[in-house]
Amino acid sequence: MSSSVFSTVRSTLSLFVVVFIFFSPVFASESDHKYQPDDPVTLWVNKVGPYNNPQETYNYYSLPFCHPGTNPAHKWGGLGEVLGGNELIDSQIDIKFQKNVEKSTICQLELDEAKVREFKDAIENSYWFEFFMGFVGELHPDRNSDNGKHVLYTHKNIIIKYNKDQIIHVNLTQESPKPLEAGRIFDLTYSIKWIPTNVTFARRFDVYLDYPFFEHQIHWFSVFNSFMMVIFLTGLVSMILMRTLRNDYAKYAREDDDLETLERDVSEESGWKLVHGDVFRPPYNLVLLSAVVGTGAQLALLVLLVILLAIVGTLYVGRGAIVTTFILCYAFTSFISGYVSGGMYSRNGGKSWIKSMILTACLFPFMCFGIGFILNTVAIFYGSLAAIPFGTMVVVFVIWAFISFPLALLGTVVGRNWSGAPNNPCRVKTIPRPIPEKKWYLTPSVVSLMGGLLPFGSIFIEMYFIFTSFWNYKVYYVYGFMLLVFLILIIVTVCVTIVGTYFLLNAENYHWQWTSFFSAASTAVYVYLYSVYYYHVKTKMSGFFQTSFYFGYTLMFCLGLGILCGSIETLSVTRTLLSESRTISTSARILVIEAISAERKLLIRTNIEESEGFCILGRLSENGIK
Image (cartoon, rainbow, N blue to C red):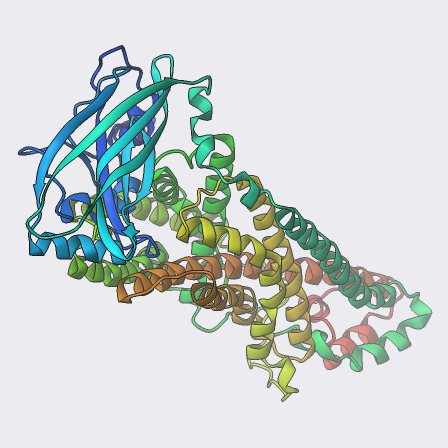
């Protein structure tokens, strides 16, 4: 046994070592590189594309610039960098650390009709390009016009700021505009100027952070407003629960001489108490519900973990570091999805646990794969860098197949055995109770749609900042705000869903599981509708490529958000109903014991069984208490 455990631990440690070595470029790149005077410094060219379409990017040398020599070096910075559509190529421009260059020729460019046409198309579409040097990036527009004429800048003036032996900041300006005309020959030149600075290497990224935008008063006000909403909703839910249960507690606390009144009250029960024998009935399509609830629990932990890592560290500094962290954390938290899903499926009497296990492990990854496959096909058709290379696909599949999938399977097995025992305080009736017709606003569809309004209202300001950072070249760094908003979102959705489920059960509709899930998941519907507004009002995106990527990525995000919210709320409502039922059942059990001691057992048992007041009384009677 000990040798088996040792072997398992050794295999796990080996897996972590392999993963660390494989992804070490993300954490141990040239970001902390130190240079000596006259050391060569590489200028990496990355990509070009229309400024208004952030995802529509192409290889820098897709434009007819001077190509470097044969087989230029390529830099692979990690999984997240490749998925972000980055392809760093050595420009082979001769740059030495702390060595100024007045003016030097890169190459000679001869224009023909095809090259002029390509440059004009880039100018008219407001192309931008991106360079990197010593991990410091420079984004610059590749466009201009002089009195309505297309021009091409032929000189790049590069100013590099350094602190001792490290590069801090790079600034590029373009000079010497020349008219774009076929048959002309230009010398493309560059100059280098090194300037010392007191900015430390740790603060080098501050120049790219938009403090006035992200720390604006409206950002603080939105968090305060959401916090006040939490206080209001928490008070509302507490009031409803207290008013609902107070009469029941008072009813059970009556003396023996008031038992006749109790019997009459029990026979006159209405609302949610009448569905006590059906409220814990297994939901329709239990396999799918267990899978989405387990996946949502994993996503909730994943988001919380990534936010905390971003707060503690500086993930926003590295190219693709957030994406890489997200993928790895998803793989290593897959145990949670299996555990929650397996436990829920087993508690509700599910028999096809293998089917549930496989669906849980595959649900969200395959949803993302389906959307990603369509977007990747579009990117390949356009020849964009956004197309994911086959090798990267293999890497992602290996992570899922050898880390995520086994952990999900293990979690399912553990969940079935550790938390899969039925714990319902009420016996489920054999024959389902008929559901009466109610007013339109108490139907599950209306309750579900209305349930997402307040949660969306608590996050829509933050959605603006997140969307702007992702679609408008801003670096999101205020992860403390994101953590607060995430916690507020969870609390608001819990409160709203509990209230919605209460009204649903009062309408004698015991199909609450899917309704509570969609009541919280509908928040994602409103986020998606907001994204449509944002696309048309806040951006200048155009073309099929960018439109498909915008709404494809947003759909992927909203699916994850909906599953996350729905899962948390289904689990919270389940916990609330179990706690409430056990409290009432405990009081009912005390009542039975007192009645027996007063030698009125037969009368109490008969009346309660006939009125079907509380399931626990019926259960105690059937067990033959004497």
